[in-house]
Length: 303
Length: 313
Image (tube, rainbow over all chains, first blue to last red):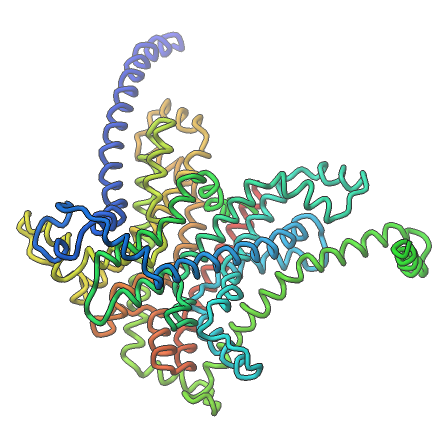
C-alpha cells in the first residue's frame, strides 16, 4: 500500500516541479508587467515636474502635447537660482533642517541611551510616552502652539511669530520622539556584555555612550538623522502658520505662496522650484537608500 | 585635587547612613542622576511643547472668539449646529478610510510583485517605487495640482484620445474628493509597500514549500500563510497610516483649500481656516480636538500591537 503510494507520488511530483517552474516564469512576467504599470503611476508626477521645468512659458500655454518638451530650456532654473528670494527660501530651509537635526540628535541619543540601558524609576512609562508623543500629529498642536508663541511674545517682548528660528524649537516635537524610539531599539539590540565590559574597565556612563554605543549603533544613528532631516525639510503646516514675511519662509511654503501670484500660476517656475525643493531628500535617498528604509521599518519592528 | 575632595565628600555623605552596601547604593544613585540628566531635555520637550499645548488647546476651546470670556462647551454646541462641521466629519472619515484601504491594498499587491522579482533587480524596483514617499508632500502635490489644472490638465489631454471628456478634477465635489484620495494613495502606498515587503521577507520559505506539497493554491497560500504571518505588521501599519491620513493637511490645503464649497475640508484644513485664517483660535482649537478620539483609539491599538511584538521577539 505504502509502496504504491510512493510510486504514484514519484511521477506526479516530477510533473508538478515542471509546472511550478513554468508557473514561476509566468508569475515573473506578470510581476514585471504590473510593476511597470505601478511604476508609471508612482513616477508620473516627478517626471512631469521635470518635463514642465524644462519648458518656457510660451510652450506651457501652447496646446501642444504636454508630455513632451519641444524646445527645452533651462531658463526656469537660471531664473530661480539667481533670484534672491528663492535662494533665501533654500537657505532658510537648509539652516533650519540642519539645526533641527543637530538638536534632535543631542536630545534623543542620550535619552535613548538612558531609556535603553539605565532602568530607572518610570523609564518604561517614559519610553511608552515617547512613542505616544510620536503619534500626536502636527495638525493637533499648531493652534495652541501659535497662541502660546503669541502669549510668550507679549510677555517677554521677544519676537517669535514670523521668525524662522522659532521653527528650530518647534520641529523637534516631530523628530525627537521617533528618533528616540528607533534609537532605543538600536541600543537595546547591543549585547549587554559590551557595556558591562566597559563599565568593569572603569568607563563612565558617558564614555560608554560615546565610545561603544554610538559607534556600534551608527547605522541607526544615520537612519535617525535622515529621518529628522527629511521631516524638517518637508514640514509645511508649522511654517505656514508661524511665518508670513517673504524673507522668513521655508521652501515648501515659499514656493506655494510666492510663485502663485493672484490667479496667475507660473507653472514652469513652480515645477522647477518643487523639483529643486525635492532634490535634497531625493539625493540623500539615492545614496543612503538602505538606511532610509531601515529607519522607515524600524518604527514598527523594533522596540 | 579639588575634584578628589569633592568626590570624597560626596561619597562620605552618601555612605554615612548605612555603611553596608554603600558602594552599590552610590553607583545606583549616580546612575539615576545621570539617567535623569540624559533624559531631561526629552522630558522638557515633551512636557513644554507637546503635552502643555495639548492641554492648552482644551482650555482654548472653552473661550469665546476674543478669548476674553469662558463659554464652557459653547464652541462645541455651536459646531454641532453647523452643517459644515458635519460635512467635515463625514469627509474626514470617508477620506481616511478609503485612502487607507487603497494604500494597504496597493501596498500589499505591489509588495508581492516586488517580492517575486529576483535579488538585485528587486533593489532597483524597490528604490524606484519608494520615490513618492521621499518627495516632500507639499512639492509633489504641486505637481498633481498642475496635472489636474482645469485648462492644461495633462490627464485630460491623454484621456481625450480615448474619447473621455474633460474631467473637472478639482472642480466638482465628487472628483475633488476622488483626486485628493488619489494623491494621498499615491503618496502613502510606498510606505505600505516597504513595510509589507519587509514582512514578506520574514516569512520562512519552508511554510510555502509545505503548503505547495499539500497542494495549496496561491489564494490558500496567501490566506493561510502570508496573512497570518504578517498580521501584526499589517495592523500596526494600517493603524499608523490611519492616524497620519486622518490628520493630513498638506494635500487638501494645496489641491483645493477645502473647496468646492467646503466639501473637501478635513479637520486639519478646516481648523486652519477657522483658527488661523479667520483668527477664531478657540473654534479652531475646538475643531482640531475632534481628531483626538479617533487618534486615541488607534494609538491604544498600536501600542498593544507594538508591545505584543516586543514580547514575541
